[in-house]
Length: 260
Image (cartoon, rainbow, N blue to C red; front, side):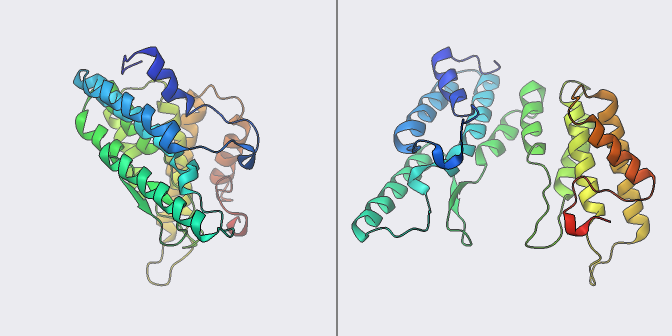
């Protein structure tokens, strides 16, 4: 709506965000060279010809659509045997898609651990710079917060510092609106996970710090409970508030092996 671009290209972009029916392995091959790149190119060209606010909104939607890069057939890493001649073709297809993305100023990286290619998120960074204020700026910052804080099983802990900083800044910068309850919930989750970090021998967490984080988590859960119209999660959130304030500790977002 904010980009105000023609309905045809808009619907094509939104189609990439539509829920998929069936299991992941039941989906038709997603050829980014033929299906995604041409739509992105048209969309970004149209956005660039618009005003600053429209251009930024267009860049922001492109950032969200690029979450589909992980589905690209060209980047598939099934691990199954591939004949040398097919492996060469796949490598060429992979390189071709990466080159096309680079031409659109879309950056990718390849995970050294998993070997898969992923989008770095540079368009979101661009949108944040293009729109320091206003509605599109709010949406861009909401996109950052919506990445949420997740438990890192490789490290047996989590670092929610950046999400907490972004979330608290969001609540102070932008007036209350339809996004406010979601930010409270994401902050509550982040404080909960921070409080649940196990004691580290080189950086121990004091009981007073843990209690303070749990107190902040409960406050944000209560703010969500007061403002949200999401009936599905109300019972779970109320149980979490009760558990924290009863001294039992959080459990909703905590891995089973760490629950008290």
